[in-house]
Amino acid sequence: MSESRSGPPKPSIGPTRPVTLLVTFVIAAIAAYVLVQRFYGDIAVPTLPLATFALLAVIEALTARSTRARIARKPGTEPIPPLTAARLIVLAKASSIAGALFCGLYAGTFVYVLSAASRLNVAVTETPIAAGGVLTAGLLIAAALWLERSCRIPPRDDDDDKPVAEPKDPHAPGF
Image (cartoon, rainbow, N blue to C red; front, side, top):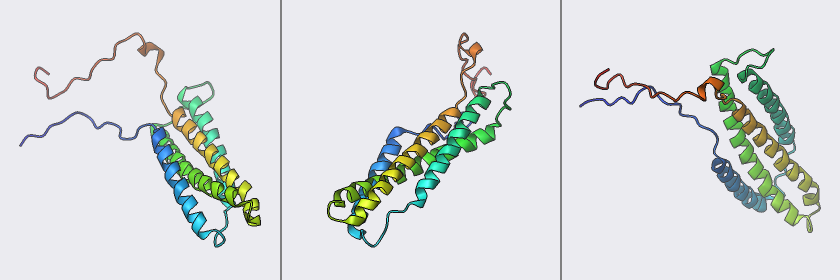
């Protein structure tokens, strides 16, 4: 039995796909609507996550701005270590998916409390909280996607004129 080698391992993490965020959002929104409809009155719409999402969005946006400058090697910035960039990418992916999840949860809750506001006074007071949850979780998604995009390495100017050479396979005949 012979082993087949295809070269060095390829990176296994790619850019966040919009469909992943959309599916996460839709499933969470449907689940939240069903659960809130069933248990409304036993639970309250939480407000603490709004501040957390907003704070994380600000931190990730500031990090994205700094990271972009460091990767572009702007004057006065220190180059970013590759491991740090990889960690930021993982943070950004996790934040965007978590943001989509919570945005969906708050969206499902918002739809329910908005529809119940005409018959329940408490729903009137919880409608702005749910809307704020959708907004702040959406800001977290945007900041996370910006951070992820800021970690991309821009093409070098001298690479535009030269064709990309294929790496040679060390196991190919004639090497």
